[in-house]
Length: 144
Image 1 (cartoon, one colour):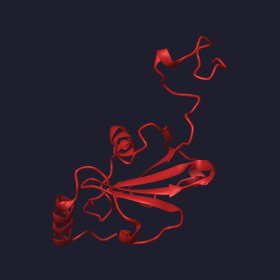
Image 2 (cartoon, one colour):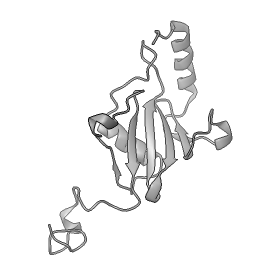
Image 3 (cartoon, one colour):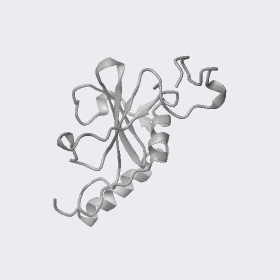
Image 4 (spheres, one colour):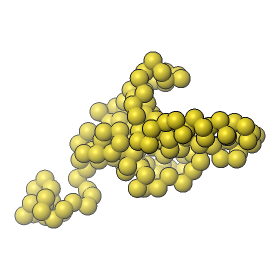
């Protein structure tokens, strides 16, 4: 991929400066493309998030930074804390979300994006406050 020109980068920085600090939901008529299953688009100075409806009530949120690196790819290295904050800013703070590390044969790596699958129900695993555990040591009474 060719390097992004300095002029384009300056324009992107100016555009980002006009965007809100927190993610803002973009109306569907302003989306540049209508991708299959896309139900929401969110944008801020730092992030672009696209939310897709998946099977079983699951949502997939694909997130990337809004600035490009010198090679023309989205800037990388989004942290766990940033992903948690993105989930919060798109209104899913009370939901469990997971990231998937696929089998080698299923890897798709075409852009510096992170994906989280937002689940309709809490997972039966995780770090729970001890006060939320029942006498059997579990959230749902099955033990373990």
